[in-house]
Image (cartoon, rainbow, N blue to C red; front, side):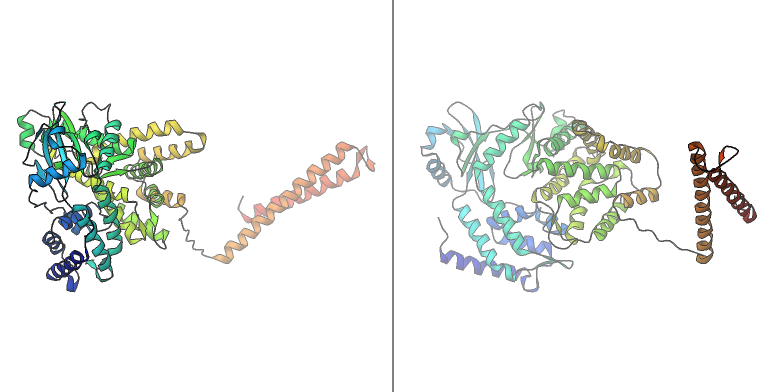
Length: 528
């Protein structure tokens, strides 16, 4: 149903009142107050905050970290309300579709709640049901925020955030999350991509029971991936789980180009020695060209090639204003300097990507939404790894995986034109060169090398140069006389003396005199 004008008017008053209470009057400078304001405004604003927590390219880090603390403190809907929604959507009595339907929900969220049920074919399923009118309320709230954008300024450490940009992103993300058929398609596509991965659990979705407000899928009973104690009790190898999780995630990114964009612990279970995702509302997609440039970026990070990192970011990014290339490269170098003294195992790949986003933002370069989602997802995966195996770093798996993947891709596309480039990269990665030499090479290849030459005793240098040029010209004349005289004599033409052409003899004589003069001049100068 459409929200009437009274709802809009009353809700607008409530929103303004809450933001004034939490510091809107003087701009919201405190991330914690921003989070509290969203919680006070109820479930739809909690969902807005959760969506924003996935976008480190839009909000500063301190806001992202605070919004991760948002909790879905919502009461479950009355079962009769849920029953009515299911029956209306499926156009059948609930008992005809699900002989058993648990009244108490398994989980409650701001937009939906999940119930355990059993189909007529005896399959145990999880039924995700959208809350009544939640779509209309959420879109109405976003519409109200859109009207307020001229008056909204989120300011953090001097950085002004574009409220209009945030609202537009929210609207797009909300529409996707509120269409359960979109999530069903996500599940099917993910299953197809991972059907040959034996350690990944497949989550079947039932299209015949699903609509845009009801989603029916297999129920997976397992252990949350961050429940370390329970996993150890069940005899699982935590290091093995960490490696498999990460290898599969890199497969999603670099091979499939389609990755789970919200891999937090609540969305990943370990069941029957398999890893399974249970929520597919938020997915990221990377086309082949984008994956290629990401490969180049990670290869540059692994081989300490600043120029490659900077150029790949420029290829990925979207220019939102004038870009000073020299400043951008300089910013990348400054970021790189933080890591140059560290061993490869100490690199924090998510931190590098987060800093890249900051550098881009300060240089009028916007990252595609899916790249920002990737950066956030890698941060989440890194956090999971720290819990499963504190000695493992994301780069430990990223380096060999990316290297082998790049080799495979390069073997498919290799040609004589780029052979030298590969050779240069190999040598640079494997030979101990001075950082100054590497920096010089990078600048030269990037066309950004500047030469500052200082000339001393300029007049003496020019005089010496003139003498050198004169001698060279004189030597060329001597050589010309010898060659031309030889040609005349060989042709046997003109007036002759003792059967030898006079012109040839004169040429030889002139060459001899000039040659001795040049030799005497060089000997007198003392410089051979």
